[in-house]
Length: 103
Image (tube, rainbow, N blue to C red; front, side, top):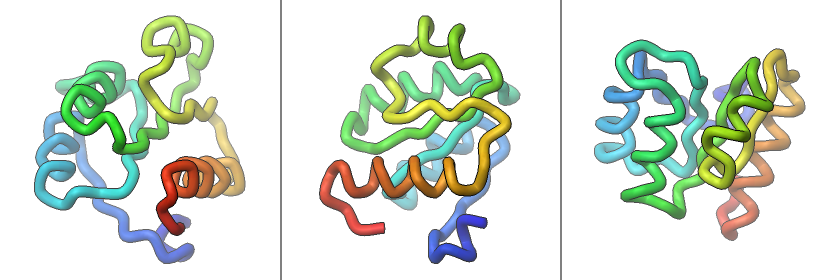
């Protein structure tokens, strides 16, 4: 879906790989789940924001209420699963245009 909209997608298998990709490729936005092997999404978001606070992060979770209590203020957007294609694209457009970047 994202590639069909012109986005370059770099998939990773866990939070540690995500940190390496962020350092190497300097992405414009990060999309992550909460439940992942080796490093959960809460820890990933916290680490991203500690060294690149301006990097927009969109988090997906089936547990939105618990998530909001645990990392309120850290991710730029939280999408509750299941989410539609339109919701994902709308969230991307929102975080990418909020800081002046083009989609």
